[in-house]
Image (cartoon, rainbow, N blue to C red; front, side):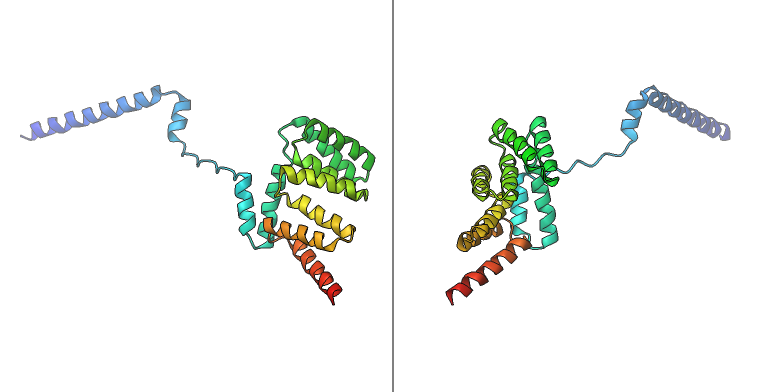
Length: 207
């Protein structure tokens, strides 16, 4: 009886070893790249970037200035992308020239940008900013209007409009422009301050 039991255990062990060796052999027959794919943990899916409309929706609801500022920077980053490498390069050179107060150079570059890509809102906005720096407020306002025709939510251009009307001492128009900024970007502190300041000035004139 014990001989039979011993033989059964021996057969079972041999069968187990044979199956194990077969599995190892099968695993070794798989190429290393496939083995790596099978053993490495699954990568998390990349988070889909918010669309411009989604960013504006978040900006309109956000009341914390720092969080709103981060959202506005993401929007600016989208605005600066023209989908043309050459236009992006020209715009970058123009911004550098503006920072260095080389206004004639910047104007020449931005004239090229607006001519080559008239549907690029940020090209017009950069030129509007340049004209403002050069105190050519009428030209700046015309460029702002082109920006807003392409992107009515452009809080940068709306802010520029507010500043231009203030330069013209047209307080009611300036106030209306700043209110439009706050419709898009309620947490913008500079717009909030401008509204308070202008409302006080208008109220003082009525007395």
